[in-house]
Image (tube, rainbow, N blue to C red):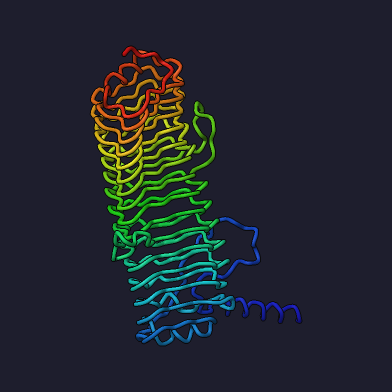
Length: 436
């Protein structure tokens, strides 16, 4: 009888727990070693009593405070904050429809952030330093007027911002170009981030040290007023920007994808980088040390407003820069061991040095329209280079260095030197005795 009574009490307690007004699924702290992605389903929610506008700011630190708030309100005119280690449930949070200020979730024990009803955030969305959050769901959110920060959430696996079409309404001015629209950093368990509807980004778009993220796909994104910075994503296999046409700041893609060191052996997990419509980068183009990249599509790129720097893509078999016309800084391509041909058919202007170094299979390099280099010209350490052509080059405002290319005929070196003629402002560094 005692056992039966205990079992009945256990059943009732379990039933009450399942029916509790929780804003998310039960926490699974008892299974800390289970790192598999949890498939959350949004719980049933009754928002019939939440129909008022709260005037001012609200900072809630307990489940009771959250439940009381959403028993009366579904919108707020100021900032809305969930904060503190005592907060492990947020009953009714999914009823929030509008926040005219900031939405902040920090240092909580919440397992789930349910913003299913939220359509507009008047200022920023900031969710950071929450050790137990597994999912952020805001599937109906369309506009975040200022910035979005999603940082240092140790167990965060999935983010759904699938209806957001605008991040930061007011793009940064030239005097203040370092304003973020989206920052996702140090979320070591993150595997899914849905931004399928994003069309416009009015600031910096940054991902850094999200170690398990394999894909960043932004199918609707057309313009970024700030920079794109993608760094230190060790598991990344796809970075896809099929509609992007213009970046107002820099494009930085640095240390991404699985490690790979053999240029003549394809990686087991190749990285694909695709931006086939991108025509202009307003600042520097910086792509460095992505050793598993097998595809990089920048075939529509015509102008770079700073330096062009591409290095360390050791297995990349081809690089199409045929549309590139101008670089407002140095042009440097290095450590590309699998490319056999580099033809810069449209390049007319380099407002800095031109450096092409360290290749294993590059046989042909040409820039038929390039007339002026506002720095030195360096072509060095190419094991297979046999053809080098700069037929329109008239001015090099630095040294001409062509050496350590073991199979490049001396006549190729001397033809480039003769082509430039008196337009060479520095020295010829080649080890080749070209006739005067």
